[in-house]
Length: 124
View 1 (cartoon, rainbow, N blue to C red):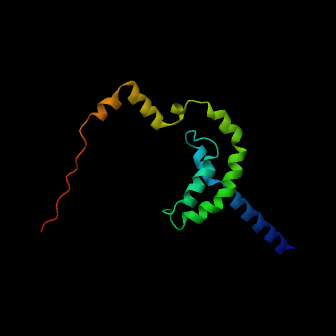
View 2 (view 1 turned 45 degrees about the vertical axis):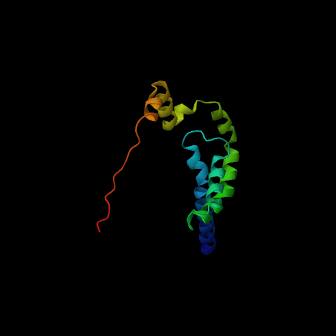
View 3 (view 1 turned 30 degrees about the vertical axis):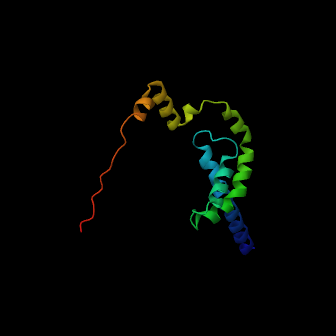
């Protein structure tokens, strides 16, 4: 009887661990600015398809992909609600770009001289 309870507890703990770590890409993509629909699924698929991804990340992203798809599907109403919102309110990058456009900083930066970095030449 005690062994059966331990097995059930171990199974429950395993299921909860898998459920807690699944959909990681969806959680990460929904914690930032609005990135559209199925952003977590797209992020996982991009990692799996990218040949430059590390040997550890590709299998983890492949495991995460179906869970992210399910979570993204559940979050579709939230994504639809956020889709009409102003992205500048969510994203620091968008706020900086808007500020540069309003202050015409982008024009003055485009006319600035490029930064030249002098690297020391190896001595012979």
